[in-house]
Length: 269
Image (tube, rainbow, N blue to C red):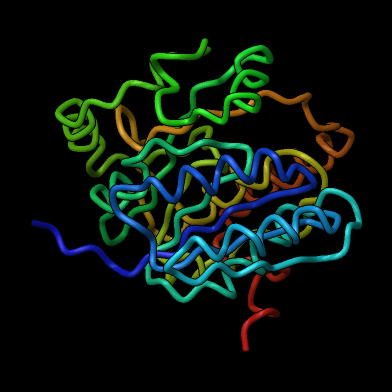
């Protein structure tokens, strides 16, 4: 049986305590519990703070709430602060608008390998299904009970996951990644100095991190048929910074960047 490293589960959130509550409820149901939870909060109001204070009493592991002033969409920055606060050797990163399958943490750890990082997938709950979940607070039987888009991402079948993992060995991959469902070794994140905080607003900061990890010699593995998450429906974020972020991404590719100056090291003690 594989021995798992210590693991920090980093959850990003902003002003949606109802969703964060379901996310944390799904963590309580995990087959393998993380060693700690870091909630990176990009400026939520007091309702989120009160929710975390209430729910953390139900956990037997530390739950840390890292809050920063609301100065617009600064996901890269709050994720870096979460990484700096994390003590686990391995970091699993999710967004607070996800409900996690009960084997989610265990799956990420099962497929973790030195010299690699993981990008998972997600299935999508529509507006009606999301409303039902908030009313019923039933998160244990989502695939059977609720309507899903991208249903193929809700299928957990470990033999297929193992096969797909083996097929990726030694392949250099720079593709679309899903920042809402990723994991990596903390030392590898430190090696590239985390997220580039020049990325502000929605979009491309995850792709930039993936490219720089790959440039640093860390291989990307896509996790399919395992590491399942269900995304709660919401309106899309504004994409007014997309053009600037695209330019930053293209520069990282052109320059073959690995380490970034404006990263997480300023939060390390």
